[in-house]
Amino acid sequence: MVAAPALADGGSAVATSAAPIVVSGTVADDASKTALLARLRAVYGAERVVDQLAVGRVSAPPNWNEHVARLIGPNLKLVSRGQLQVDGTSVSLRGDVASDAQKQQIASELALNLDASYTINNGLRVAVSEQGMLDAALADRIIEFESGKATLADSGKAILDQMSVALLRLKDKKVEVIGHTDNAGSRAGNLSLSQARAEAVKAYVVGHGVHPDMVSVSGEGPDRPVADNRTPEGRARNRRIEFKVVQ
Image (tube, rainbow, N blue to C red; front, top):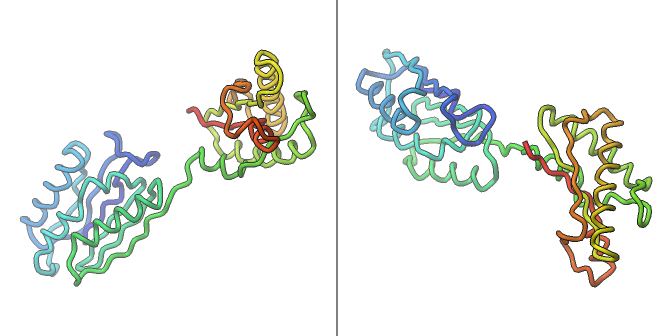
């Protein structure tokens, strides 16, 4: 059995020099140990590989060294907080990846590199990013204000109650609140209004426990529309508040 409990950095989907790759378990002979360590060092760098392998009386399937070497490829660097376990012909991979596409890519590569005698347990999970968490909380809803003002409507406050909870989960992250408007009226007036609305949103979430240093604000006015300003529906979509993780 071979286990590598730390395939990538604990906080990122990309491996970094700070993340150790711990390889432990028992292999059949010194040649197997040498081959496995050489492959890990080639992929991750010698300075990151921590050798906790033992040589003992275990039975390995035919061509086991070659199969395991093919399992340890560059795509494993996409896994964070990962563990690859190989026990005979049983392969188990756990950890976090950034998307379903990455999960399928890694699983497909593992299957292609093994013959039919091996079984694979794909325990990879798609990690929700901080930005994804905020986007899911907002759910494409519009935070509404009184017409032409920076005074939050009751419906806008209800959405911000939920956004405050999501922001509190981010802990040490920095978030920018960005105000946007449609193109009705002067650009200067819309820039001022969008800034004031972003500041009103910050004041509201700070009043619900979010640390003021966590939130910065800006107003983009009409400069970044997401819909056609020639229709009422498009203008309504452009009058929006955006939450962006910046650090």
